[in-house]
Length: 91
Length: 414
Image 1: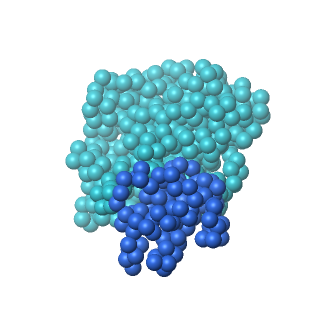
Image 2: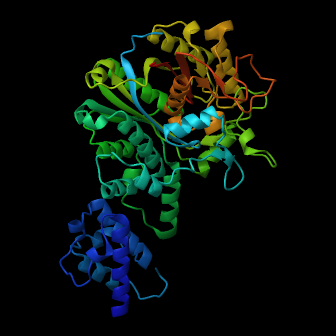
Image 3: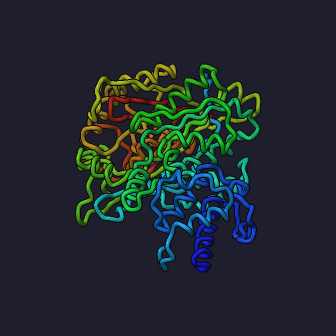
């Protein structure tokens, strides 16, 4: 489970970096519980696309409004990990 | 010489199959180089702007812009291939015109084009079918007007802005609007962008079904397929390209000490009441005559005609007849840039206005590489190679499905 959560964190980080070109991997640390995508400069379009791309990669199918209101990156990672199954190769 | 043109060209930029930048375009035209190759599937010929790589451009061609590299990358990441080409050509024109010193509220922005990115629709539809998701960005990118937004944010433009749609005459419609805006002093500066149309397979098949696009037969050299005004013409070849002209009122330019690259002496954009693909002789004659009238010149003063010349039999034949009707026996040399860069659809009006101005300034006319001896009309066509020509005034045409007819008269500055 810890392994799966780590995999989800890395996916989220990769998506944020690809959508926000000014952000580097070291700007997103797993132990920083308070950091939010908006603090990294993401607007609502960016935040939604990070979420969608991650859900798509993890095979999560649910209405988008159920995933709204995730404030911090940690909350996002936990939400995605909770709603996905640790299937290797899914990404 | 008109000598009284109030609307000057103070900047220009271009990206096409002949390369990135207007210098590359001028060199390609002067060498009469053809950028048409076979499509990856081998079914069609096309003229992709393969010399344009976004990553390379951001590190080498984006100097002098009012944003840093991260902001630029961020902005372009929200864009489509078409908007990237628009940004590259507009950046060249913006920098060349020195617009960083102009009040951003004095700059208008008109992007010529409608239905610019059907390839985006196809990609989005495929993703939705396969995974059930549609990206949040899609709602923005799928609107052509997002290009106006990207360019305005990039350059900090605060004047008027919109898109101008008129099928293949979109670029010409944008030029016409820019010319009206500047001439009427509604705004002293207008950036006019001809945006690239990036078709999906659906549009290729549609144009092909209509008989407008040439099919690449087995064993045919792609570079020989686009044959404007030649008896062997059988349709147009799609080209990828974008261009920008900065139009500025002569008073405004002279106050800030900017030398004109040329003048827009006159322009026209009129309808033929004909909602179809057929060209209209009367409409084309009237478009050319009105542009000459607006420039205050006679047909005899025009030294070069850059024809719409797509390479479709009906289009070429009607345009040849219209040109002969307006210019008569004294018809100046005629060439068609689409034989070299393909038909860039929305961008064509602006890209070919840039090509025309480059020829006026360079004192040459490019060749018509695929024009043989048995032409379908007795036009005064330039032969297969470029030649020197010292003309002061040139006319360029742009027509579009649905009855759009436009012409522009350009004058060189020196």
